[in-house]
Amino acid sequence: MDSLIVGIDVSKDRLDVHVLPSGEAFAVARDAEGLAALVARLHAAPVTLVGLEATGGFETVVAATLAAAALPVVVNPASIRAYAQALGQRAKTDALDAAVIARFLEAARPAVRPLPDAQTQLLADLTARRRQIIQMLVAERQREKRTTHARLKRSIGRLVAALEKELAELDRDIDEAVRGSPAWRAKEELLTSVPGVGPTTARTLLAELPELGQLDRRQIAALAGLAPWTRRSGQWRGQSFIGGGRSAVRASLFMAAMVAARHNPVLRAFRQRLIDAGKPKLVALIAVARKLLTILNAIVRDDKPWRTA
Image 1 (tube, one colour):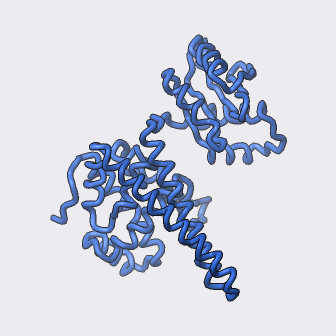
Image 2 (tube, one colour):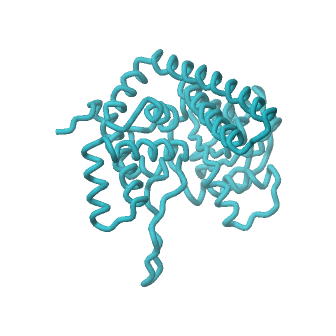
Image 3 (cartoon, one colour):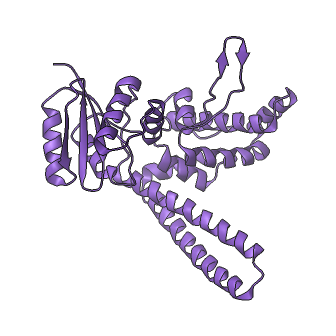
């Protein structure tokens, strides 16, 4: 029997399933009984890949259930959407979406990586919520600067105070989560041994990039969206650029790179060499962020802290 590729579109109440190469399509309920039936059905045949598109959290239990049943699960929303657009897929139904997911898996064969455990997922959710609170604080403070009416200023002040209190509580929750795990505590100490990397960056990497230390430098750069994309066609050479990957990780690394470019002697010298060679400052900063990630990846892989010598 041919190996099967399975695309699953997840909605609130049901799962639409499309199987290749047969083209078989069916649906099950998104509940314990439906998931059990789906697992039993997939176990009855050789399955190469099972793909889901992230749908606001509905996919979490589905992905965890399939992974726990030793099925090769991939959750890749951005690439699947881009693939659908490339196909010119304008019509949108759950059954059609499941077929597109299956076709994407068949064409791209994305790598299967372990899903984060419950503890890692909780840390990721806490750090994501922290980013949201900071974004709201920035927005309210900008409104406060533009507002002249005393009544509105008081309203904004109350909201800013409430957000600052929530941010402090989230920081305590994140600190307790990291300090409560000996493995995470050890990794945080390794990461923060690098000048320029503080607790916020370290915890973002723990939560959002659990593959750190397990992949080579090119793979980890691609996951973070720091691998350059080359644009060439015939004699034409376009400017390389970065993108994709995990935006929260990339943003955190950029902030760390800005600090490291001033206070880390190795990365400061690296940035200066690039600027002396005529590289634009932004290009040099991206290179510093990528080199910083390479260093952090090696530190976690080798279980050895930063040393300047």
